[in-house]
Length: 304
Length: 304
Image: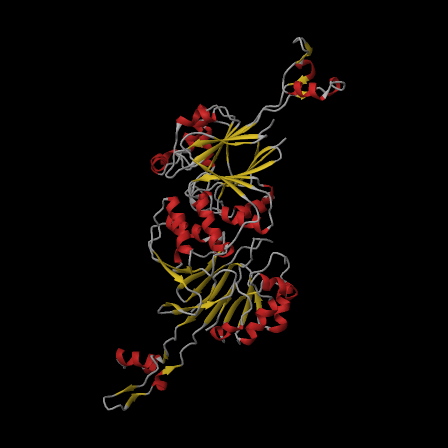
């Protein structure tokens, strides 16, 4: 089953060099969720063949325009398309107020319901407990309140060995799927789990950290994730600028990835000053080899 | 001197068929002004080679997203570019409140000053009295308060016949430029105006009417303009839908243009239901031949 991260944009501040503002769509099993929604995200979705009405959850990290100015347009288009399905929206204080003000002056009542959860952002919290995934916040350090997101698949059922279970009852099969032995009233094992099952497929994880200054305090939260998106706005020669603007350098992002023992690092949120991004990638790779640039149009897959 | 209308987008509701939301940039002499600013307008400006920092005035017709959701991003990018020049912004009640709320939560103080004029919209008013142009509002009939704009060049000075004025004083030349004769203290004509000047070039005019239902009441306001942009969201076979949504059909827009005796008609604000726009153009042309589709990327020039 899929676990894909579709990059729709990853440029910081103003759009430049044909690069769009930040947005990502995650296709996890049959779920489709969005993280951040910069201006023109709905156009990028169309360009890359992603269906707007399949989105169930949208997570907004913070209220700088390059991370959410496409949201009102996206919500509006879903309304015009006649969406009826509830939408679950997560964002900082102020996001709901901004949306309500836009809707008020547009005299629009959306065709669907938005369930809005306001993020507190100071400590990591579980914000979505879905049958397929859990989503936790990651407190980030930026110029305004900002939150990263950790998305983890729920533990999966053990895989049954089909030709050994044909005569078992549903009740017994469900017990085996959970990884337990089937026992009788006296506690005696009737069906030993390992005789009937194969190990469950691994539960994959993805962490999104943007925008933020370098902060080792959050390493325990993203420890050993399969895939980490971390901003690397500047080259390390611009460390002073990165610190002043609460951003991270490519080198720092890679050191962070290495310390957190992640599987793979995606670097994004590129400054306009870099038309050519290869120095960003090279700098990161010197610290953490399994790094890629989060360039729009790319799809990163976490294998099962 | 130029009078150009650059179409950056003219699709209604949701972007579709590769067409963007409404925005236009007018280059009039050395002025550069914008009417409406749908999502991704800043990207369209870049695509078509228009400089953001040359914009001095922005006019927003109404607060439906397809007409202004690119504005906050544009204002933000001009700030990031270090703009210092004042910007003059015109829009309905609510626009300033929305901008202020965005800036508050982004914790951003713009690098330049915005002079905001709130449009009343119920009667035509002079909202800009500039040395080069005058701008008047056109009250439109839409689902929410909506204003069109009439842009007229100021009367131009008469053109001097150079080889006849070399011995005249500056004072006398200025009198002749205004179209007057130069007279002595007794009122006797010393220099007859028509001996020294050629007629002034004509003052050109452009009217923008979108979004609105068909409304003949405003014909006197746009009477004989050189170029009229009028929405023609639907074909006339969808008249009922046009009326219910406070829009105009292509046929109605053309009848309006014909009754207003305009020089040329541009039709825009196309419904998503039309991938092929040629039926819209054909329908309008049956009523008013000098019609063109306001397709993005096109530039319409009014000659002097």
